[in-house]
Length: 576
Image (tube, rainbow, N blue to C red):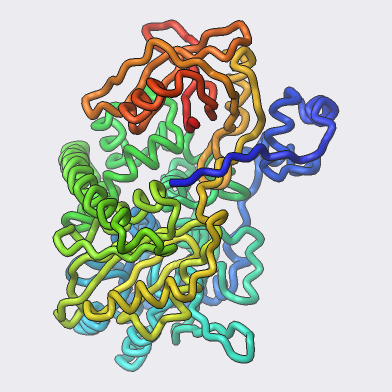
């Protein structure tokens, strides 16, 4: 994949800003690089744990939905929560279920099966609800695009309430985008036109949480101080790869602290089985260790297992579910690696080398790993990528099913909307999407996307945003400690990245059972030799250094703690 390195340069008197904000000039510069311009923004960033989250009542239809739901609870009718099979869907289902029960509601739930049901609502789920005597369906992390399915539910006499966070479907008329809204009694989605939510990039679990808090407040029911809603919403925010800015930053910063001492027995078991009990939890632990365990069961079996982990009432059942989820995640990793190898073979083939948008059919891959494989291929090629597998429609017909992962310059959902006639079903947002289509239309899908694509070579190159060029001697333990002021780091608030040229790499060796770690010594001639670690294609770096013993690198300072000692090292991110 091509890379384009550039140093972010925003003007400012960093010494003066640092003095005002109480940080070093280098931290002030990094904060400016993150778009922080004013003293108010700086205070909110540095002390985000003190910020207040916006009340859900400002969301369009939230007050209406809460009033309807409160009435249904008081009348004693049967309510069904219908969620989704990923982390966000499981967490939002849990929050709605627990909240409605706290309010005295008669509620059950259904999480669609990834293979049998597909994403979101379908006619069978609607008819099953009717047969079960359900009066009211409330969706979470889905529903905004289920126009036909919700129409059926209304025709069958059920009330439907929608909570979602995905983009609202639309059509264009005379150059204007016009929303296509489902026929629900109330629709709560921060992306609706006219919604006054100041920060809209929240996940489905946060939408559900805000609805629940307003429901309980409306009904005069106090929320226990040790409730687990906060950390579960934060967990979903990280797991659903939402930007760690604004309200999400506040939520995650506080939520991670609460997660370390959570009262949720299932989450305690999952943290324990992954040997993280003694750790200060970070977005990395949730995004790459804990979260994938919840996702894996929805991919390979049923997400019901993940929900039952969160609902567990005793340590024995919690431990059993935690063990099961961890084992499934190991299986998922193996299947993913096989899928990535096959997909990269296709991506690098002569037939596809000129494609700017990749559409790859993997007929032997498990359909549940399509999204993960798409993400990894996107990372390696820099191209928007759709991975399709063999699947079934809700009517049992064979079709192609899959997921897409995009780049900043390519709004995947809008581009799919331009060819919407090709799909059986599709949905998503700018950076990710899910879809199904007839097998004989896969080539047409690939062709039309690429014909419409306007991405340039420059836009397809991976953008490596460097905060500053910095000699290694400035990467001290003290500076690494100060960098923690920028945490929690993640999407849209990445770890600070530095660069240096003319770096000699010596004493290198490949480590790890997967031979994906390269440990070496870096020397840029500034008077300090630095321990360095690279994670990735370790053998590729080793071979590169044989021909290029002096290279340019991007890196992040890191403190290595081992047996009570603390030493500075750098994590090499890129090289050329």
